[in-house]
Image (cartoon, rainbow, N blue to C red):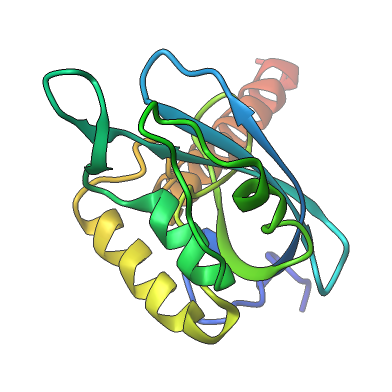
Length: 184
């Protein structure tokens, strides 16, 4: 009997994201037209040395004189500092203190990278956690997925249907090619 197909090994899990334990190697304040503060956090995976770029964005509550009085929801900047057990110091003008920024380098945390339907094939979620709380981070991510966020997350079902469509197109193309060679 000939082999007519292949069997793909499956882990039983249909998810397009990974929870990664990382070390912060660099932090840079970025300009953003959408948020009051955006940090580019460069992370190195502890297990494989892969580099991730994570953007942590934050808007501030301000009084009538534009003095920062607090953090607006979601408090992703606060979550970053809590995950690394460092002190968050933001001036009244909304500037992150240099010592707060520098204190993040060398700290360990967990992040989630996922398969993206956007410009890049993989993306890193802007919410992080301590390594000890990575199960909580994953459950937060799953809750956001149910709400439709992040918008560029590629569902496993979308990938499977795209693959199936490509396979079907290849089969149809081969059938047409064979039919065109058959003499009538």
